[in-house]
Image 1 (cartoon, rainbow, N blue to C red):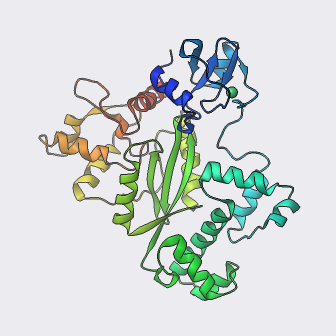
Image 2: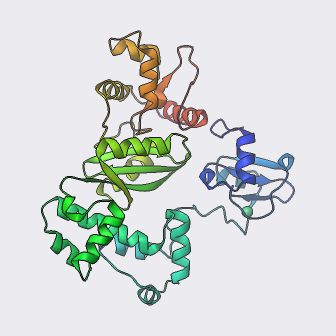
Length: 349
Ligand SMILES: [Zn+2]
């Protein structure tokens, strides 16, 4: 049994509930049919005694299973599919673009297909996605000195009031307040441990959390308050670099992250987070030791609490802190993920 997998019970429940948060985390082999599936497969669910769990499709194949024709587990779900890639590149290069159904058909794309894909993967319609991109682009321009009216017309709005309404609806404030406000752009990032929610301001990454983390809502609310910012889905320059560095990390090729971080918090929290960042790749430390390094050996609980309040998982490596007895205690993303990260690091030290 692979140590990196969640508990059997957890996985079987996810399978029965077609829980998409477990996509990319496990693959299930059905012994009675010899077929392997994604957790979200819509085929009838097998009995628990007839399933076998694997961490990857590769392992399932090595055990002699064939891929299911319904859920096609060999494709990486959530990744941009081939038919959509050229369009996504076009949108990235031109965030102000407007695309009606007719424009999509001209590009050989079925408008219904793209609507379904966006609803499923971004939880919003394709048109909303385009609008948030246009607005966040316009926000960036106004914040750095462009006139509201220029940004409005360049974003393709025919009237200033139309632009203002749309802007307000997306950000919660009017365009001329852009210089005093901030936007946190959010996006989903796929990792071998499941999807994560990433957030960034123009200064750097301010959020990286597993989407199934219980605290996520609370963290988002706190972050909005601390940065006086609204969350909007979209693109941000820091995301490309984040994706790249995370990928290298999970491949065992990166030991340190070099990406700007935005970590608002109390001075105590900031101190704890900066001490965390000094624990080298592949090593662990106890909460007690952390408290000692901070010159406050009695503050073990406060240190543990501030660790738990870390909003930038993996990059600020709170997974490297363990109990004094060497046990893996407490991890927001779940202990099995902590174990996976520590295994990954010790293998590549
Ligand atoms: Zn299937």
